[in-house]
Image 1: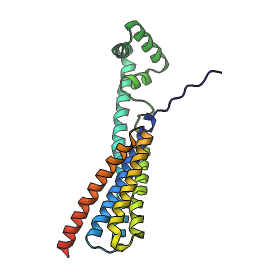
Image 2: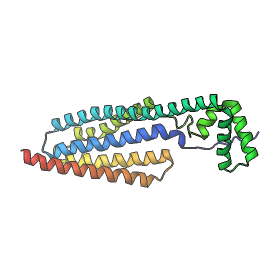
Image 3: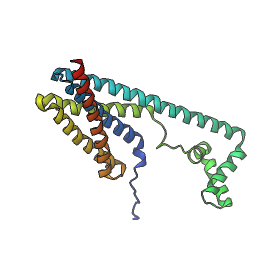
Image 4: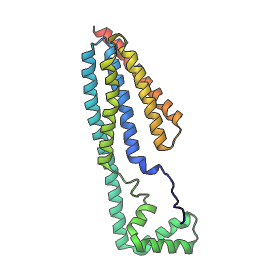
Length: 232
């Protein structure tokens, strides 16, 4: 029995991984920064929790809407390109064959072989051949707005819950330090997991998200301290 050749690739994870990582990272960073800023303004635990929960709901909805609109725009562009390509195939079949043949020649095939490949692929599915090799579209990279929106909203909510749990259970006098410390740990874990799933360097992934997360929390803590003091 011949052995089945199997390779693990990461490209099929691009859609949901990008949206999921973005959502979780934003959920942790924005919610932790928000509660740290409010807490730095000498707010009581209840006010900090209300601000954090409001940030969770608003952020999740914003992420979902933003992803849906953004990816829908990409999807509309893809559909428009496919419609135009379909029309060109109906009106200029010979020209489209030459175009596909030239693409394969530029990729290194000899002209005769390139023509045979173009003819055979177009005989099977002309639109798919042009979508893949001329437009760069396939089932992996095709835009999926609903999938991206749901992944962003859910991952944002999960990420946002983590600093809120720290607010809920941390002693009042240690709330800010515990929220910051635990959020950095969560960010590092998320960076490692995301890098692992994407086949990237785990240490780089962890360092990248923790650095920017810490910077965001320090900035909002400074704002909360300054404006909280001036208002009071």
